[in-house]
Image 1 (tube, one colour):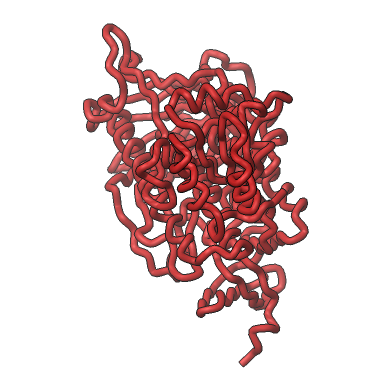
Image 2 (tube, rainbow, N blue to C red):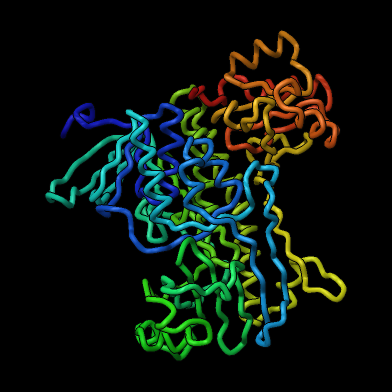
Length: 502
């Protein structure tokens, strides 16, 4: 039997280096965690997949120092309109073009290969983060001290083993890591075949518009999405009696697209039938194995929240792993990962299913009930981000589980750039000397009205004197008095703080 000490050792091995795995690797790099990302494919998949992310995701990209590189490769989305078979608007889901309290815009469109290239390029900044492509993981053996990760290097057929304290499966819907956890899936009931068509316009077609359009036509529901540059996407329902292969043939694809574009307007980039699912893994964490992204949950695309949910997983999980590995936190801190994230993602998936009922005209009234009815105007939809599920948040204190805003500092920068991937106390006036010493010891940053003018008005609006914000920007709890402030400080003073990554 080979000595364990002979294996190459890492704190975390990430299986899969798509957007979620690459974001998690960057966050762990920021925290100084020795990380290995293993990916079966040789290079980034070149065709479009995810096409939307939101302000919260951009805030995560800001945290890892890559937002400025990602922003020029995006366009702002004005939103989505739901139209009936006659073109009448049923539901108006317009997005504001102004910055949200997150400090970014609400809706961005992007080309996934461009995003992945930036995220993967960002890993080169971290000497303790390693990326290996063409590595196919086939076995995970965990014991009380870690996980033995076995994989094949597909470039030469060599079998290799490494050891890790933890393994995170960011390896998609057919996740190997999920199989080793032994998790079943909760089925939320939505499984439909849709033909996804990506085209590149060869001439200007401004009439197609910038809004996403949901054509709620009982004969054949369809979705139009404006992409970056010349990219446009249609997603069209495959009828029950249709063959998936035949419907994706070019002649049939152009027939289905004929009401919008012809071969004179565009060239086909990809046409493939996908089954949209709505499932959530029952177990995201077992011992030293964890799941994130599509390996933990899959959603119909009607809210554009599939990749966003995975990015939130990464932001929630990375600082907790760092606290356990480097900060002396108890391993049961990781138990709060699923309990916080699972209800959050379930709420988004259930809303996506309701909107799917509108698009498919199967449950229009139920779907429209998600929005605000207006007289002589289409129903207006405004999606509020769910709260965290039960976990670390001190639920009997104000704002626990809510996202904290990002403030503009007096020097013009955004407050997250000052805070970094750390805990932060937002107070109107500097804390007492004793609190400052305790907070400094715990690695908690302090922001006051001296730093950002918006902090005082925000605290007053909510009737609080202070708020403690976690590295993933969710509020642990807020204080109305000194006693509650002491509770907040006690809740985060060792061992559950994340190590300073500055």
